[in-house]
Amino acid sequence: MIKIKRTIPNIFTLLNLFFGCISITFLQEKNFVFSTIATIFSIIFDFLDGFFSRIIKKNGNEFGKELDSLADMVSFGIVPSLITFILLKKVIHQKIPFIEWFSFFISIFSACRLANFNIDKNKKNGLTTPINTLFFSFLSIITISNSTPIFIKNFITNPITILFMIFFSCYFLISKISMISLNFEGLSWIRNKKRYIFLLISMFLLLTLHLLALPCIIICYIIISLYFHLKKSY
Image 1 (tube, rainbow, N blue to C red):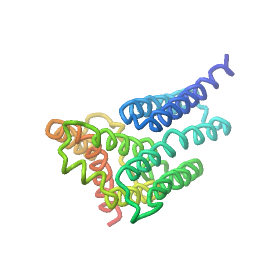
Image 2: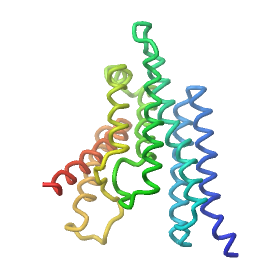
Image 3: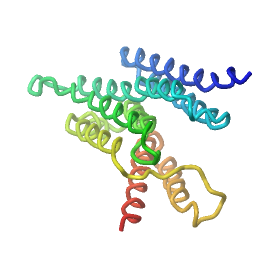
């Protein structure tokens, strides 16, 4: 029975990997919607993996830790790179050859992030790979949505914009910035000030921007984390 319990988190890890592979196959068909759905399933199973690991106290299992990192590398390392690669290939011109290959810097820095996560005691440092992947997945849907204004589509698919997003993605993945935890500590405003601020801003964005709110919420999450990190430093 103990051995069965210990394999449960690994099953969820493998399901994370499975849906990560499915997301990649949809990206090969340039189907951003189904790719994003598969990515969301990967995130759910990644969460369940960690959740059950904490319940059965499987933190010392080195096999599970390595398997989790390998699965995350596929689901949350390769996927965002492929998204930016496809977006750049759509708008790129012969004047800037091979610029789309810069997309795979996200995979490189995701690998560094995941490797460092296994040895770093402070697990809150840097942007997590699932949130980073969600950001690019939501952006990809916005570029094909009929409700998105043309000027926003043109801005998002501009090569310079994409390169800036790749740069900031790589930076925040390995940064020492302490990202806010979304786990509430009771209902106290003092203990949960960061979370309440983020929640209120997120609700406002969803009500006003709708689909466009999704990547904006992630940007908001980074900005709030950066603000409190700098405030704490000074």
